[in-house]
Length: 242
Image (tube, rainbow, N blue to C red; front, side, top):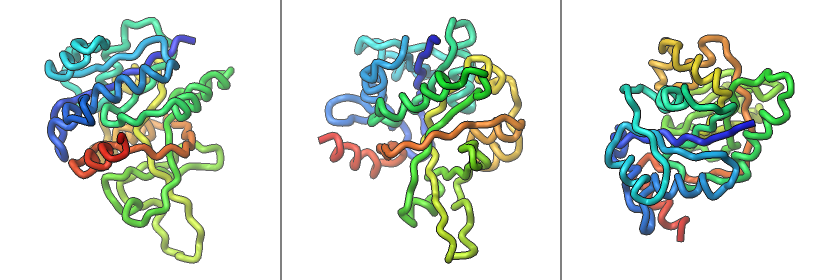
C-alpha cells in the first residue's frame, strides 16, 4: 500500500491572512508543519500543494517538495485531488498546513484503519479529540462531530452538537481535527461532486461527503495539538514550542 501525505496551503486566510508564513520560533508555520509530517517517517512521500508562489518557494528553497495548483479551489481536498490524479498511490492523508504539532501517533491510527480494512469498505477516515471546555464547545471556530456506535460520523457543525437540552445527560463532545485519509478514488470522486447546501452554509468541506451519502470513519486521538487560526493561537504555539 503506497501512502503519501499532502498539505494543502493557501496564503490568504479570512481570520488570519498569511498565517502559514508567520514565524514560529525561527521557521514559518508551513515549514514547521511540513517538517513535522516528514519526521513521522510514515509516508512514501510528503508534498505541500499550494496556489501561492510565496509558500511554494518557502518549501522548495528549504529542501522540501511542493506542487503548484493549476486551478482555483474552494477547499483543501479539491486542491489535493487535482494534485494526486496522475500519481500512483493508494491512500493520501491530508494534513492541515496550520498544524505544526502534527504527531506520529495520530497519523498512525489513521493509516491503521486502511491496513485493517481488508474488504476496502472505508473510503475516508478522519480524527477527533474529546473536549470538555465549555468555551471551546461553543466556539464556532471549533468544529464538532457526532458519531454512531461504529464511530462513523453522523454530522459536523460549528454549533455545539448535540444540543444539551437535558442537562442531566452526560454528553461527550468531540472536536474534529481536520486531518483526512482518503483512498485515491474516493478523493477523486469527492472532487467531482458539486457543493451542496450544508457545506455552503457551515463552510465545512466534509459535509459534502455526508450529503452525498458517503461514510466517514472517525478515529479518536488524545493529542490535542494547536491549530493556528488566530494571532492568539500563534502566541500559544510559540510558548508550547519552547
